[in-house]
Length: 302
Image 1 (tube, rainbow, N blue to C red):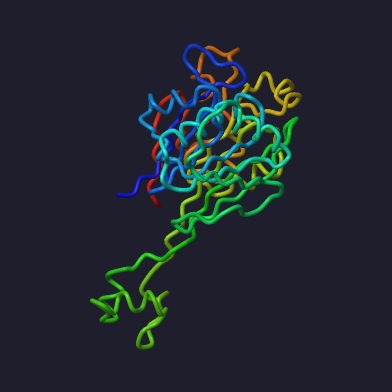
Image 2: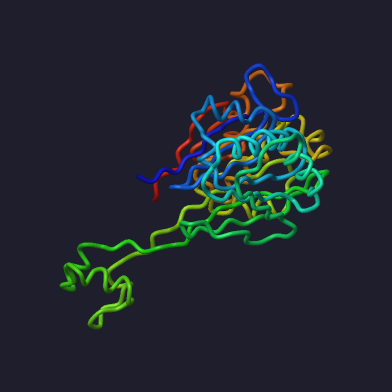
């Protein structure tokens, strides 16, 4: 049975709190697992969330600030300690190669796993997953180089039983028309409709920029930082972050179905205020203010 869900491991910004660990997000997508931005303490949060090293196929780091990357050392060593039997690929800004190297070899350990380094230095596709989805990156606007990520499933087609019956197509011929595109003068388009592929976007530390909108466009789920509330927008711009209202307007304009707000400054004590400001900004889709160890399923297909 395929599972598509977000497992939230940590939701704090620069400073962790008693209730919020540094960042960490696992996307379960059918049989694959993508770990985004493993901050300090991610290995322990994985244990608490029931996530094993064997669940990881890719690690995607947006940028090399500590709250998004200090957990790399422990996660990589755990992958090796558990002798994960499959290849694990790591994506991260190429400009931060020296930081990745230091974290990968922060202490002595025995390497037992093929960890493939696939650094990012430009917008565009990065990889094709085993399920045929495309992972791509877009440059963001932050004091250090930062990239967001997007996973897109190709569109397919859904067969329509009533139209198949009307054309007398049944049994093995259903598979044949799917493979060949036509059968006995009947086109595949006559007996099916587009089955839109699902899309997932991941946007961390950034000001508003073109990359934010490109990553969010048409997403079924968008995980996006909202470090500050709207009254602190000047501080957000200065330090390269978004407010709750800005994140919500991006989601509204991009047609996002489920918005997940995260990466909260420790200065705020009421998480509900992020939701209130997001709704006030006009976003009316599904909305989650993330907290540690939360599981959020991707929306069902339309």
